[in-house]
Image (tube, rainbow, N blue to C red; front, side, top):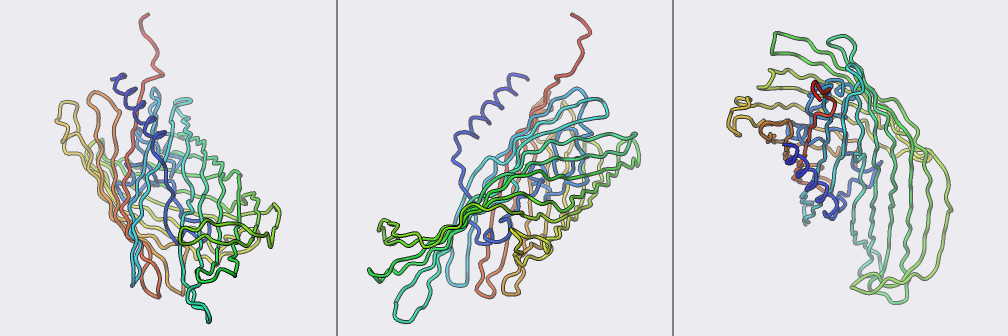
Amino acid sequence: MKKNNYLILFLVVLISFTVQAQEINSPYSRFGLGYLDGENVNAGLVGMGGIAIGISDPTMINPANPASYAVFDSTSFIFEIGVHGNITKLKTDLQSENSSYFALTYLMFGFPVTKWWKSSLGMLPYSQIGYNVKIDIPVEGFSNVVNLIEGDGGLNQFFWGNAFKIGDNLRVGVDAMYLFGQGSRSSKVYFPDSLYIFGTKSTKYTRGGDFIFDYGLQYDIHLNDTRKLTIGAIYSNNWNLKAKREYLANTFTGGYDDVVETLQDTIAYIPEEKGIITIPQRFGAGFSLEEKGRWLVGADFEWQNWENFSSFGTSDSLDNAWRVAVGGQYSPKHTSISSLAKRMYYRLGFKYANSYLSIYDTPINEYGISFGLTIPLKKSRTAIDIGFEYGKRGTTDNNLIQENFLNFSVGFSIHENWFHKRKYQ
């Protein structure tokens, strides 16, 4: 099976380098830190609505609760890589537009340090900025004045997590995460009907990098030999992210109807200045009820205090956000001699999120239904996870934009026995 594992690893790494990653297209990513990815990005968790806080699976790396690393097998090394795709239809009462992207989502490793201390490290997205909105502005004396607002970039995270087993049932863990990245937001106003009026463009560039920490715990209650209830909790306090920003404004000609944009003059420039981006505290709780090797059901609740968010001393009028998710999985007959269809895990889930945005007194909320499956390789703990999610974000009320999206995730989980002691030589 090692040859199969190495072949899968080679193919996945090849895909990750050959895929042309594209950015998201969401007008709502203009605000705050943009669209928040969260830490329950594992393709197996996506298929269960994103439940993760009470999940402890020795075959899965679950950075949403660092305490879960403690259940890793003491003789195994785990490698996971995932890709994510999205198809979105943006619509208003008058028009609609389609967009899509495909990108590498996560790269994670899990391994034992001792029997009671396990560790994990990897790369995940934290937030994404990507939008391109054209607004026609009625101005007396002009038949057409256009305002184009654009943004791109985001934050990524490199994490190193450690979990410790305390007794037979209690686990605690901590993720040390280094957030880094940059984003740009620009606004352009031009006059397509006039050759004598310069357009204006203003752009703000922001980049940051610093450490934040997440904490987690899990506790098992064994109901019988095969059934257990796992209760989990997570917490992260306020963190001040060191950042720098620049501002540039200039005039230009062209830039519309295939006319090349030509810069004319710089009208404002604020050189690089240092500041702080405050990422607010959050906490969450969840549980899972499991029949070993057969089924699992669970639920999560998470809350974050985005009213305390600020960037360079300025708040963004954000609301506190919360998320609830329920889901589960089922395997008909998980034995080594069962057919593939009976050894697979089938997943279903639902989530509802009250986002940190409220525009024109209208909450921008999100809900989705998800399903997925795990395809195990025979005589191996290596598996392929597939997850799908269909949902909606926002509304067409008050001239706003509704996003109908289909997300799909594919994850490859490779397990190797690296820590066996040889009995014979």
